[in-house]
Image (tube, rainbow, N blue to C red; front, top):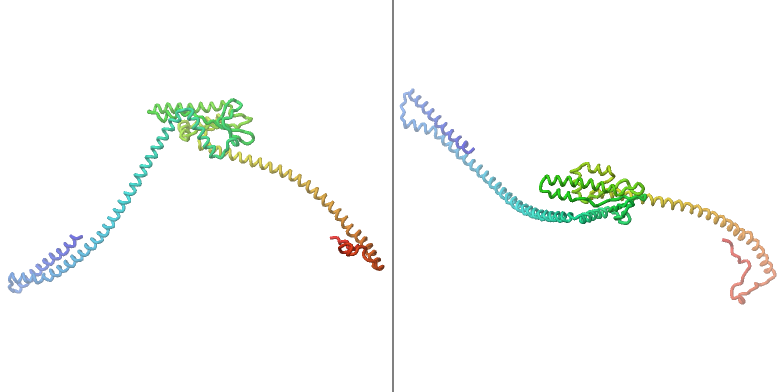
Length: 381
């Protein structure tokens, strides 16, 4: 834009010079036609006089445009300086925020790294602990205890531990259900090949360990079905097999999706900690419903006994009412007819004694109190 603004005055100046030369040539030709001699000096002066005003006007316009351009440039420079200051402050703020966020991110990454290391150590310790069959059994029982406690069941009231059954088996947990029914659950679970699959150094070793683990699970399901945990007379139609880890439960579903159907076909329900909690919630609800039903029956029996006693009470009340009515009639007869007959006789005796001027049989001085009069018999209420 600045180059275009300088080019316009220059073009105007060139055009003015060209116009001046053309006018000068025209005048020279006119003078020749008029036969008026003219010198070179006169021609130059004539051209300068004609173009001087043009040059002066163009110079003034150029100065004015230069001033306007300078003002515009200064205004733009001031605006750019202001914007540059704002951008500088914004960049500084962003740098401070980035430094703070970077520090927080590094702190969180460090904390996450520590937590991951602790988790790895715990996992390794757990693997070492699960290497022992006895430790695995204790760990499974501990997991089952946690689930039982969280579900609100009470040992000795809602379930029993390791109580033998008539067929010779000893389930880890026996749930006491309504109607004198029980539900057995086994906690011990094979996990050796699962740990080998996790620690395998090659795909072939992992596949072999996985195949062995699936075979162990199926064998465990078959063992549960042969321990007389299901009895048509005393138990429900299913038995629970507790898998004490969600990862192991997911591993089974991932590598043998038909395992659940196979277990159900043999009346065995595979339960992880989460699914066991859901099953226990159903058991707890059934127990509560049975207690409510039994309490309702007891209340109905009490109401029946109350109805019988109420009938006897009503009969006795009627008898007492009849006796009270008879007593009231006897009292009314005594206080009415009999009293009036006696009062008439007493009035006659008092009237006779008054006519004869006889005093009361007992005076105030002798008795130490007011005389007793025959007519002082109280009126009935």
